[in-house]
Length: 199
Length: 188
Image (cartoon, rainbow over all chains, first blue to last red; front, side, top):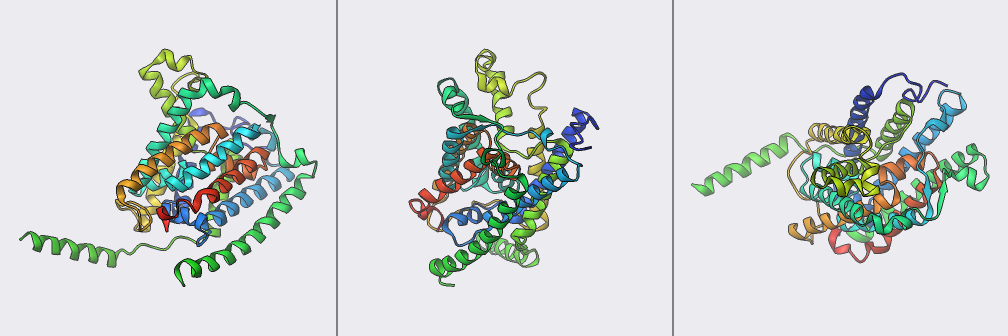
């Protein structure tokens, strides 16, 4: 195992910030190329006439998932050293719904609003300002909701460990679901394009 | 005279639009593979995934610390982002600065950089900006409650098969589809 490089001490914290900046550039570049700097393109996902969000997101997830899995199998990457967000079931579901509402009302998510701002979209900038306001509100009310925010903890919970299914089988299942999802998404897109715009 | 100027401006704009047309977006699968590789590189090089909302938290916590140091230190949420040293010398802060640059580079080469407001045809500019801010605030709160946003939870946790991240992701889509019809005049 030689990766993650940072965890094996191949470079220090200062250099990691340069990496962060470079990775961010690539991240922002691909988000913009996908069309994620436009709220209309993003919101279209929820009006079913353009499923780009689903396609891009799941292609990215599948690509990274396969990479992590195979680099792990080949003994190149130690998966246990990758930072893993602990699960809090109810707060994450409630938080997810809030994000879904925020998406329809505001048209972006935090990352895409940064991209949108970078290409001069005023609504993206206002959304980003909103994220700052929301984060501040959360910080101010945190003392009262801290118990809820830490409720239903499961610690480090992977789908395969919780369901007692081999890692590789879950990876294969996700790929299968994604491929079926892509076909389904394209079918739905066409249907709603003609339904909404008559083309 | 003024009319002439206006006409010239319109001609220039039309000329610009013709000479530098917006390029089409990439094929979604190609863009998705690109994003997936970037995410994989973050795992391999750093041992961590991507993020966005975490950077906002660092900036907010730093701001509160500057204005009301005691208040910030007494709050567990802010304190989490104020660990030793300069809280802005943070991985996610630098990553998000990169996103700003990367988005701009892509936009420039695709002739998409311009000042405008993205919105549906039936909503006014003012209304759009007000609701963009409200939506952003909702998302700021939701992302903190969920321990991340679309980048940190859905993409990063999703590819690591993190159970909480998948529950989160399904909830985001469920929440969106749940109220989409109600707000259709915003977008259609």
